[in-house]
Image 1: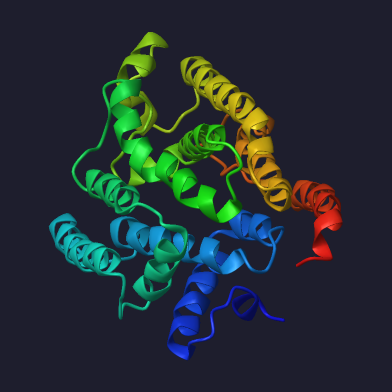
Image 2: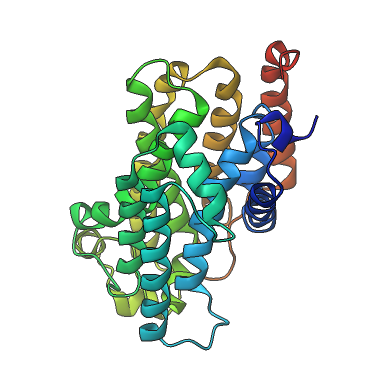
Length: 302
């Protein structure tokens, strides 16, 4: 039985929307998509729907090949935001992404506030280029990452409310790991996600980053940021047990692969300006293999 049928998604138009979300996930979120394959078939389409929503909004904001000005992107995002939030509130949509998203939100009673917070952060990307301190950055990260964990939790199956805290921490850890890896790309977009006060504490300023030359000061800053990712990951790990058993291998694999980005940054000598740190195929295969074995006790019921 295919994933959509397993999930009880039979309407042809709705299936097309879910298929588009899956396409976006497979195309742009290779690590995320790999982890999703470790879930039961009946859960996967709903995860794809959340990814499709996030990716579509992100494309409006960050598509460097687009000829749109920042103002035009703001208008485009605002227009799509109004439509998609209205659809979520009304419980139906004709949008090619919104149909699957609205269906998922209804099935799992995902609060509208989570989607609003995400879109708030996407709008921040079009108006802010730096953050003065960690607390200020967290206002952005809550919407761009923590709420993704909260949206995912009911799909994964929450056995204890403590799972929600872990979901937020993992979401934040994933985002911070991406910030470390993507410093060079974010500079090209005119943004710096390293808190300014932390940069200054290590003798780093924006001009130094803009030169894209690795220095001892930048290395020290990255070490500090990497330690934070690992601390959040360690704090979240015990809460995975509060998710449904069949979902745990997926989340443990995602945790190792996403937070493992910082291991790859270390392996390239922290030079994120010359090379984009990526999880090796060997590591992906190893993590996926271990996680797959963890799913075997549950697969007979999938």
